[in-house]
Length: 226
Image (cartoon, rainbow, N blue to C red):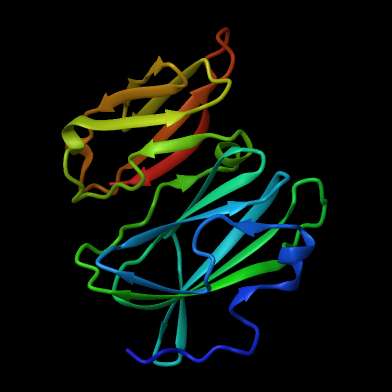
């Protein structure tokens, strides 16, 4: 694997990073070697609530290929963000983070930090994470499991779901014509869904929340495809 060339000052913190007073709580070096694993979890201290997006590229033979679905972003409070980054193979990956204060009305987000990951001995290639809808992020929801699902995932016939959904009255998993209702235990919603009959059919699995006990209306928070 040949290390890809990058422009001067591309790696690491960009000017807006210090201007926004952001701080990496983990992975403080921009060059990261990942050995024997298929993902990393990057923790970013923000100080104030931020809106955030990313781009992940597989960088091979001088070509950057944009990867969709291999980044999952969540937060549990107003001043920290956690970014899960998955790798579908060995090789080099460029990871770009874009952010701005939530109070800033500008639609475009400036680039604040860039990484270069070198992945070796990835024995279990990552699969795309759940797709998170805007409400999942803005409401400070947290997903414990499952982070990802596909038709070959083990335990689909008794899949455990566990997450935090602030303010929800009900949380349910939906697939096909079935609804699997989760139970609130402490701050978390937990439950199991029998998804085995749907695997391999390109079936959509969604996690939905109801915020009004007098209504049957649900908002989609997450979706997977099995």
